[in-house]
Length: 142
Ligand code: DQA
Image 1 (tube, rainbow, N blue to C red):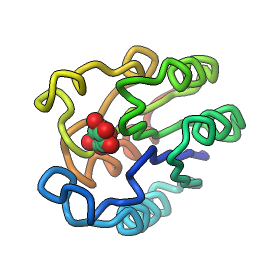
Image 2: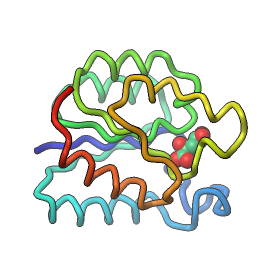
Image 3: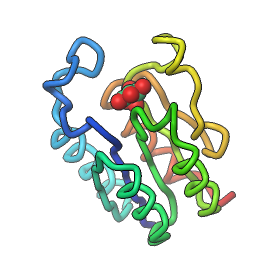
Image 4: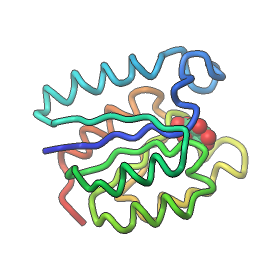
C-alpha cells in the first residue's frame, strides 16, 4: 500500500511557529515518526511539503498512491481548488490537523476539505499524523 502525505503551507516552520499551539516538534521529527510507523504497518510512504496551492494540487493529481493524508493548513479554510482536486481522485483521504480547529477562531471551523475527505483527525498534536496512518491502513477506497 502506498500513502502520500502532504503538509501544507507554514508547516515547514513547525517547532518555531506558535509552539503553544503547534508544539515544539519539527516537521522532520513528524516525518521520522511517520516513517517508522509506516514501516511497521508495511506502508510505502511518500511525503511532501508545499507552501503553494499549485504545488499541492499538482501532487494530488499525480494519483500515484492508494490513500492520501493531508494537512492543508490554512488552505483548509479557503481552497475550493484543493477540495476539487481531492474530490477528483476518488481515493481515501484523511484530513489532519495538529491543533483542534473546532475550538479555535471561528474562521478555522469551516473546512472545505472535510466534505470530500473520508474523515478528519484534529487536535492530537504530532499524533494526529500517526492516527491518520493507522486509519489509512484500514480504510478501503470510497
Ligand atoms: C492547522 C490548522 C490551520 O487552521 C492552520 O492554518 C495551520 C495548521 C493544524 O494543523 O492545526 O496552518 O492545519
